[in-house]
Length: 485
Image (cartoon, rainbow, N blue to C red; front, side):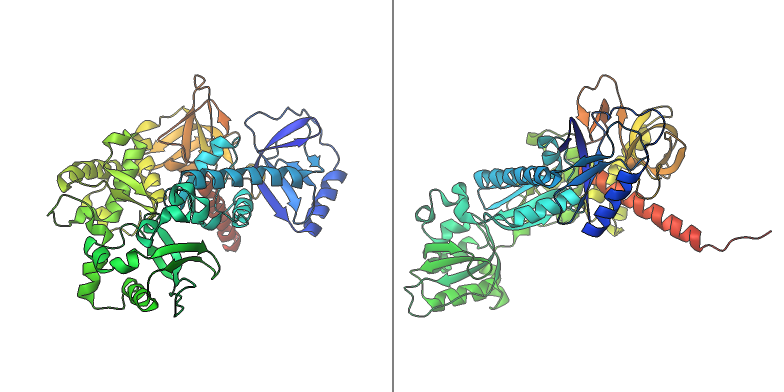
């Protein structure tokens, strides 16, 4: 986002909320600080600054923590709160509108990368100030039922009455419970409607989706499936679906089935097992059907820009994970799995035995480490995650520098920054190389050619890692006994 202060606009990369006492003390210090001598330059278009504010105040101050000397800084912004709130509200509106207008099941996810490009390079993560403000704003929206800010996206569920593609014109269009299950319901109660002789409210149900029941289960519980939907609300602290035309006894038994309160054989007859929904008819499940394998292959397909119609995986938002496409066989999976392992420089046994790579970000990092070991060469000018501060504690940013040395075995490199060499920089921290022919902006910088995917959220995570390592290094150094001659 950009904050307007007098006649200048400053691109804000982070918001820091201080207690009111600390903020006003900091502001007084800045106001009383004598102007530094020497040349000052205009802020570059791709440069990002920090907006400091009090918890309850209306004003703020734009500062640069790197020690850079810029005209107009520090900049005092009387209406910083108003500008910031308007910007966060516009992002929240986008997240809600995109979800309710497009979802067919009440679920939607929006990546931080999408918001970064849609909103002028706004950097959002689950940890930073911008992300926390957006999360707070979204939780205030009546359309949003629940949300999770993950490593690389915001996953949201919406109240179905706001989702036209789910309701198809309202509850009258939903007709009965079976058709409403096609919207994939999560964290809900079922209750008998007001016309029921015996009121019943079910315990919380984790999920009730189009594929929860087998065909046998749908037939055997046809009376419940045909129950009319008379209302959807949040009156019991979570989504509550009110039904009529079904006895409380039948609904109680049905919910007991979903909760496993029946014998195992009957449960398996009625309740579908999601992991068995893939592959050719009659094909037995194999080790290749492991979720880690599908995540690995999905990451490989993304980094190598495999065309959508040629991919063998897809992202299934209902489960928050990647799955193999319907009908894909082990014979089709095996060669792609081997290619993905080759990029990781691992074999099957090593990949399955390690406790690493349980999350997608770890797989992306390892693949980029291995690919960049062959891609980078000494002398290249790159954009990388600075592993040491220039201007004192907390000064960790994306930096420009030149590759001095690449260690393909350790998957690290040495980068010459503006003032000194940074050694043992993980290769995955190198985000792109500078190329004058590239006209678009990446990671908030012009003329950057991204290397194996652009991941602003991961870049922020790497900055956080680098700062934590440096703080640990400083702590260990301070605790080390001093040597005397």
